Image (cartoon, rainbow, N blue to C red; front, side, top):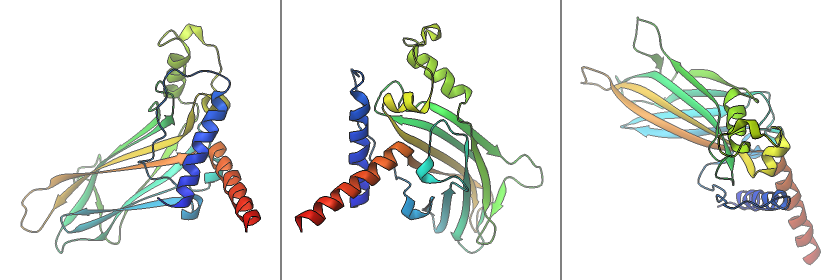
Length: 240
């Protein structure tokens, strides 16, 4: 694990401990270190490579004009999604039949962790072909528009604050700070692609599914990470 990722994880933990001083949480979910983290060094963009029986598929995600260091759960923002072919078997045909995307909250509080904020579904509705054609030249591209205060996150917050379902017992308004105070440290983007693939010699298409997961840390966590790195650098400089 690289030092910057370690620093980010440490800062997530320290930030959550600081917020936890204002209250007591009976159960804590460990910070998820299994999901790839979007970092500034990648240029607010992440790319994955998938191998499918000799076909190499690439999937990419970027924040467009929204800056990673400003990421707030409650902001409305968009993520650009694309899937393309880097290399394919001669004669193979690949179609994107369906794309499903979720954005959910990552939190150390088990009642908030995994709460869905927004979703997107896209399928081909034409009759001339069975999906969106992709090859080395043409990619599938779409925009996942995320609503900050979506109905899903408002309903979920009411459930969380209302003693597990009693929405009339709200005690705190839904804000960025109340989410952070409740252990929230980022957003998880989960995207599932259903691809129709026809290789040479096949009479029919068969389906292949790909899944990507990305963790986007909140602005507060990123700022804490910067401060932690600066502190460690100053300490090292003093020791030398």
